[in-house]
Amino acid sequence: MYVRTVKNNQGKEYLRIVESYRENGKNKQKIIANLGRIDTISRKEVENIVDKLVQIYDIKGYVNLNSVEEAPDKKNYGIKVIVDKLFERYEMDKFFEKMDKKTRFDVEDLLKIMVMNRIIEPKSKLGIFNDLDYYGFKRMDEAETDGEGIALQWLYRTLDVLAQKKEELEKHLYRQRISLFNSVVDLVFYDVTTLAFETQQTNELLQMGYSKDKKFNESQVVLGMSIDRDRMPVSFDIYPGNTFEGHTFKDTIEVMKKRYQLGKVIVVSDRGMMSRTNMEIVENSDYEFIVGKSIKQ
Image 1 (spheres, rainbow, N blue to C red):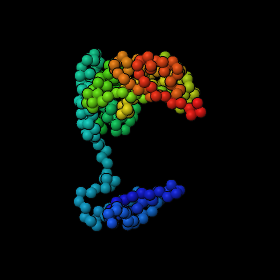
Image 2 (cartoon, rainbow, N blue to C red):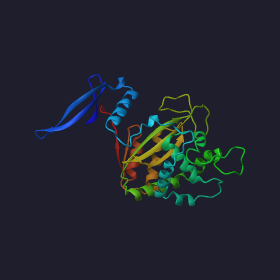
Image 3 (cartoon, one colour):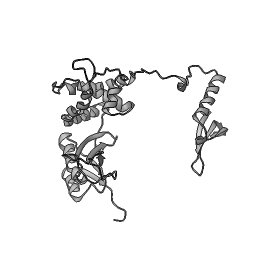
C-alpha cells in the first residue's frame, strides 16, 4: 500500500491510500481509502493518523519531530563536515596557499562559513555573524582588538579579497570540476540579467538602465553568466548598469577562448543577444551557435 495524490478536472488534489496487485499478468491498483481534499486536511490531522498507525503496529524507532523541543543553543556540526569535504575535493587549500597572507583573518575559513550559510539558510553578513555559534565558531565583539573569534568586518572584507583573485578562482574551480567529474564543456548557454539595488546613487558600476525586473527607479548592475550542459557555471562578469546586453557577449567569447582554451563549443543564446556582429564573433572564434528566431520571420 502507498499514498497517492490525484487531481480532478478543476485542479483540486485528493489524497488516497492505494494498494497495488497483479491480475492476469497485469499491474492494477485498488483504492483502499479516500482521505479527502489535500487543502482541507490539516497537518495536525495527518500527524494524528500517522501516530495512531505507529501505535497500533508498534513501529519502533519512530519519533514525531514536531513534538521535540528545540534546544536554544543548538549547533550544526554536520554542515561543516560536508563543506570541509567539498573544499578538500576541490583542493581549495592549494588555491588559498597562493594568496597573499597580508590579511589578519583566514579567508578560507570565512568563505567556508559563507558557503555553510548559503546551503542552510542564506542571510546577510550580519545575519551570518549572529549565527556563528550555530556553526561552531566564536564571535569577536567590536570592543575586542586582539581576542579570539571572528569579527564582523572580516566577513564584509572576505569577498573584497576574493574579488581580486576572481579569474584565478574561476579557473581553479573549472579545472577541478573537469578533473573530478571528467566533464567535457562543448555546449555553453549564455544570458544576461540585471540586479537592482534599493538606491538611486550611481558610481562606476551602479548605473540607471533598462531593468529586467521593471525597477527603473533603482540603480543596477548587469550580470552576464555562462553555464555548461550540466548547468554548472563556467564564468560570470559584472558590467555597469547601463550596459547593453549584446555588448557583453564579446568578453564571454574571449574568456572561453583564452582563459579556458575551450575547443569546439556550441554557444546557445536568445535572439536579443545574437546580433550580426556577435554572430561573426562566434564564427571567427571557430565556435558554433544556436539562436532563437521569431516564427513570423
